[in-house]
Amino acid sequence: MDERRGDLDNDQFRVAIFGSARLKADSPEYRQVFNLAHLIASAEMDLVAGGGPGLMEAASSGFYEWKKGASIYSIGLNITLPKEQRFAAHLDVKKQFERFSERLDSFVTLSNTFVVTPGGIGTILELFYTWQLARVKELCDKPLILMGEMWADLLKWMRAWPLKGNLLDEADLDLIYLTRNYVETFAVIQESYNHFKAGGREFCRIYREYRP
Image 1 (spheres, rainbow, N blue to C red):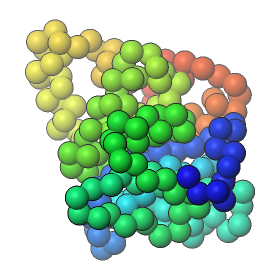
Image 2 (image 1 turned 45 degrees about the vertical axis):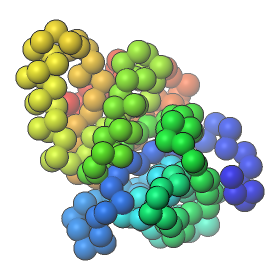
Image 3 (image 1 turned 60 degrees about the horizontal axis):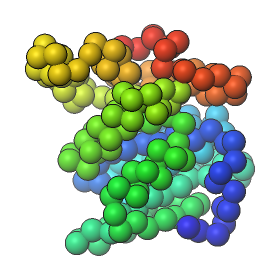
Image 4 (image 1 turned 90 degrees about the vertical axis):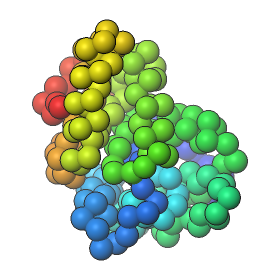
């Protein structure tokens, strides 16, 4: 890990953003993530992202633009792939992983809130891995937020098939916060941050404003 930040085990609040490496700067999804990262930096929270291009770079670029020398950091957790994936710009801390499982565990260890933005199989893997940990009460005080229209149909499918077939419980779906845009997303993050600063636990049981 980059030696510019050796105290990542401190009590700093961090927001993880998962998202596609394929979406470009001219896409509306890129702008949503960029603006969300602005708000995260302005609130003096750390950012944790995948370290690569696309929406991962939207996160690190938006964070950097608003950071303005504050003692907050953007952390990039990159993965080694057959087709080399460069690190996004403006990262303060960089770490390269050979295994997806180790990378996912680092996301979970470092982050206090998770935002899932539009993405493909990799992003969906990150979503379900984190969701499973929340389901078994490992992450009850770490909200899982799905930002954007593409996730609404997934949640409908979860209700129509696994839930209807008694393969999961209604409470498992209650762990998810579905938001339409970066403003709604940041409202959930801010509430989580306030709870964190107050020393609270079991956050997922007390905040219910945004629901699918």
